[in-house]
Image 1 (tube, one colour):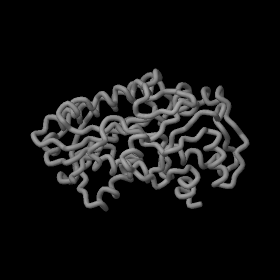
Image 2 (cartoon, rainbow, N blue to C red):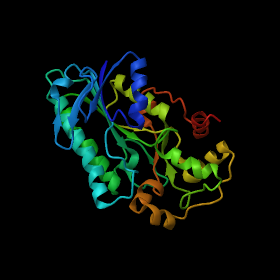
Image 3 (tube, rainbow, N blue to C red):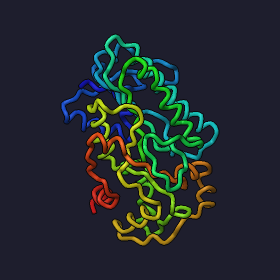
Image 4 (cartoon, rainbow, N blue to C red):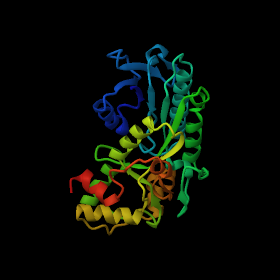
Length: 299
């Protein structure tokens, strides 16, 4: 396939490209700068609402991963606006451009997140579960709705609701390694909150799977089969690193350090399960947390 990709320099995009290429696919990246190679890069400017429609011709599939990082800094009002706008505006621009093509791609895989569900305690969350009421829930609702023009044009749309992506080159895990290796890692808040996680290998695997599985459409949870509580995650990481995990961070300290982001990223509980992925036959490379961490950390 000729696959259009946004967010190609991000954590998931940079891992996806070699997987696509090794599978014999051609990758065309959406870039904000002037394309260096018109055969492999297409310029767009989501902020200005501009995209080179001619460069989209002949695309068989699209994977949309671009968006402002939600963990790059404290959530000021301006940052929250950028988080929302970068996702909604870019997604709608791409969806409308693909819908307007004479020969449309068969599928659009657009990123979303389990933040859609909000803080849900011990409730098991499938793709049929209702949305929450938090800021990230609203972001995800609008993010997914922005793919509407593509779906209405007959393109199969998959909204990939990812959990915490475990990788050593970006995301949450590298930030945890230093304090844990120093023996000062510990639980956050009560430690009872569930964390839906997925190894980077399985995020890439899930994307490849949904690209070619025609029965999958709409929301798809990209999470490992078994969510773990923060306490379980903490103990498992400590065991893999052979370090103690005795210094917890109380909820009030997390809120002082991170503000609203603490409540929605660190202290909220989301026990999502990959119902659609499993039902469609996807086989996880790393279904267990300890196995995933040992693989990633070479332990």
